[in-house]
Image 1 (cartoon, rainbow, N blue to C red):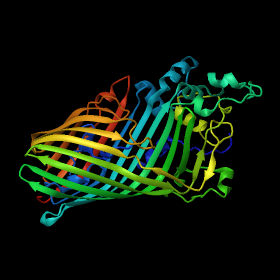
Image 2 (image 1 turned 90 degrees about the vertical axis):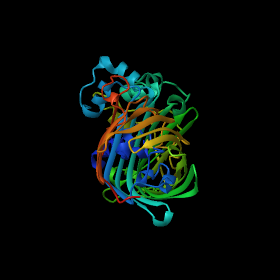
Image 3 (image 1 turned 180 degrees about the horizontal axis):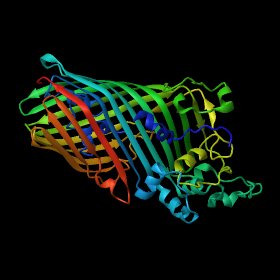
Image 4 (image 1 turned 180 degrees about the vertical axis):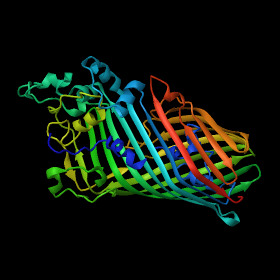
Length: 474
């Protein structure tokens, strides 16, 4: 196969060792321990991207900051734990012919693979004097990957030219078309229901919240946030009956060979080295947070409004007739590599790409609702609902619902747990442990402790932070 462009969500997986679907709370180890329930819990810099109005509440510290909080999760609703581990950790293991049909069936699903990584490199929040609210800053990286395959797509990935749909129209040995003068079906018909998405962005955030109503028994805060976004990689392939969305742009870090496309006058080549931006955007958050009585809290926010414009290394594809693929499928469990091969620019794969000057797309906007009770610093419980408002790369695949709680059996230890569901991850039982000693906090958590052991619908997740500090009294 000649040098090809691998613009595919799973390029993100290749880059993960260099970095460490995107939900902001993954980089908050305390929220990860509640399964992502955070709307009424979030304070200081943790309110960024969640509900900026929480910065207007009276906090427990004057200054808070963190360095290097990380969260990550990978899950499948159709693969078994055994298959998922083989695909990620033992991809060079030979695939027996007797297991090909089972692998096709396991890869067929709306949530064959979901992966999210959040790295909060630095976060700082300050409570302003005189009741003027709170201000927060952060720098964060976010990676989201989503794979949904219909049966034909899974069959082509596993069996290549020997897939059932291919054999209907092409001779698997020669590639000769068998349909005479009638053209083969459109990709939008053959692959309807397939989605392959990846987004990697770096954000520079600022948020502000202030109390706007301070009455007896009722306090209301309002907040807003802005983020400047650098685009480091995007691949968004979505196939519905009658329509195809397929485009990508990759940082030079991915070492893509664009071949003759680099000479196209419509192509803006960024061929430097390392993690250079190939797009930029602007995002906005707004929110309200209320305290009713002494213990009840409610919040509503709309986050990640705005758009990204990908300005370099942009390629796109439209609906086209099903092409013969030169691949004979997977010989090992390197399914990810074969997905990349099937959606590259080789003229004997499923798509042919064209150069584009730029591409403007919406950010993965979401509506977040929350309610909770805070008895004291020792116990707090909350209910969250997060609803995606679009289907762009990096957004939740479905609505998220969760119930979470924090409990301090002793002053220096906080335990977190709950029950959550949705967002392409199924039902989850989270658990988190945080050490609290004076101004310093450190902890580790999982969004689903059962997911490590389930053979069906596996879910591996981890959140941790060692350098979270709260200084002064709010």
